[in-house]
Image (cartoon, rainbow over the protein chains, first blue to last red):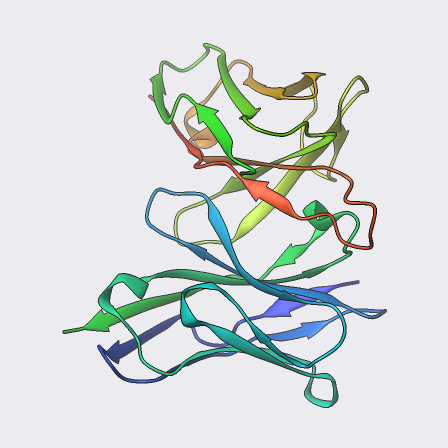
Length: 114
Length: 118
């Protein structure tokens, strides 16, 4: 069975500070890993994905994530947070050819202080 | 490209009535569409997978007679909540994907529909 754990329900950072959102997964095969962002009342937007190759992946909006197989982690990072980054962030794991069958974590709410 | 729309964006209905939510892929042909339900401050739960021209595959615990899904064309899938009750109030999100020919078929999400049943 596949599962995703996002240990931090809510994170608050100051604008301009760095950010790291944690994600741990459990998957029986080589995982496809995703990070999505959801603004209030909106659908999800894909920030980045990983399934092979370089373990440090770059995404949109200045985000990056690092896959660490030994730790079963796929943490999301951003060096300098902007107020517009305040949103809900979801990590997901699943099959690549049927991404809709992905399992989503419970999400981390990011608040950005001015 | 790869835009998915949903209509309506929000709907309020009386208990016992049925509500239809549309999910459209605007600039691509979606061979597969997915319907999710999201409760406040919670994650997405996959309700069903629909492939164009065939019956939807429902996840365990989802009542197929209550949540009717139709994927009649490559650009349109509908979710009908029949005899809605207040506990059906939720945020419903659809996503659509198409075969890329590779090992990964990205899914594109609609903006969601907020359903409130009074």
